[in-house]
Image 1 (cartoon, rainbow, N blue to C red):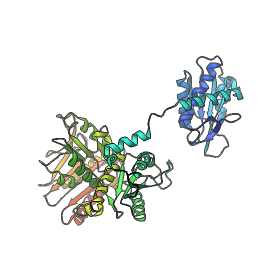
Image 2: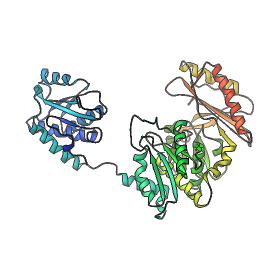
Image 3: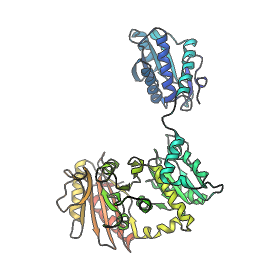
Image 4: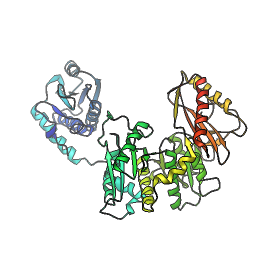
Length: 507
């Protein structure tokens, strides 16, 4: 545990960020500083707090003020200033401030941070002041109990996945490569990996140290460069499964034992099958958003074991639908094409870790049965071909709406169905339904345009939808059948030409 000896210096506070000085230690320092001033006869001390441009300064500044406020003081946040600005306000406005604090490490190397403090009138903090702060900070740090117990969390997630029931084993039966990308993947999955190792599952965690600079590039399972790095490592280590977490670890992407990417809809299908096989729910529901593969609809046809509900794009809408009275007690699993997967057993929210554990369980069982993951996916990969998401830029939001209407008019034809998000009074949330009426992206519940040509053994669909934040269009195309690769390429090329004719630039 960090102690004040690591950062309390002769005249001020200096330490490594974030190992020694961070929001947690800064909060304790702030509380101790307020208590010091109260002990010196100032019942409601006020402090002016500034910070310079070093990494972590805002985190430390906010932490310090949180602690100072907690102890009963008042804070004035000066923001980004020089140390002399703090001196100025504490000297020239001494009647308003009991003290000043400047978050800075002055001339120290960039990995350091610190806090300089003065009393009202710019009187420096003496050694007795700093000794009190150091002693009290240690007391506060030792009394702190983290709200999150990582060991408890790891055991909970393992239990939800069913992997806790695996017997202990002193040999390696299964190997997974985990690419954390210097995000939070290793923090979330690391304690779980330790528990799994005792059961014969070895996890090789790469790029595990969190680093906001992302030296290898942004961790994102939707980026081909990220998934290619993962694929290389799976083949290098001869692993059974590759796992790649995004920055905050609520999404995970996967590659099989040959290093080939498993697209999100295939992950959705594998987990849906596994969860439906063991559910006790009488009329279970599976949810997918309107960009997910026809594969899922073919696996769970109308009138089959599960009811398939199509949802709009957006995790908030899916979570609302899952929690509605109509589906709360029936939903088994839900997923998006972007790799967000939602679990009613995990408070109806998405989890990259629980998806990882479900995939590990599925692939482990396949291996035990002598079935390879790549072999299991071969037919799906041949029959259903996805374009991936293609992005286009336009000049204005009005141009994106005009392009959507133009594409609808050019693709509308007998035998082609338009699907759109509509408010469903029965559940108080949005669902996706067929619509034979006119299409107006400005008045629709959601502007996303989906056109579907389903001829049973073969067909295609596309979704063209606007970005929620900027004048962009995102295109997804899928074809299925015996000639799916050519059909998908042809339909994508046709739509690309139409969208470009509307003035869009492909990115």
